[in-house]
Length: 107
Image 1 (cartoon, helix red, strand yellow):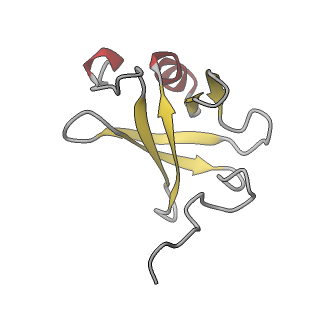
Image 2: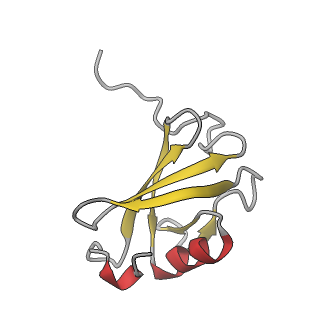
């Protein structure tokens, strides 16, 4: 396990997290973790994030029931981003979409 203190954080103390479905390999969402979210994720096996808009800890699925159970966490080679491979319950996006990445930019 890599201690949170060894990760390279953004100036605001957060680290970006890319979330991927373990079964389909689809990229589901991107979020951020602070130290508390990282430690809660490790402790519970469920993805916790730091909500920048609400300014607080956020357990994914707490209100929707669409939990993300951790299969594996990886840090990239620079230790400045986390890849979370999860078992997603229900849609990942607050819009009801399976993935948050449905707005295609290129043709």
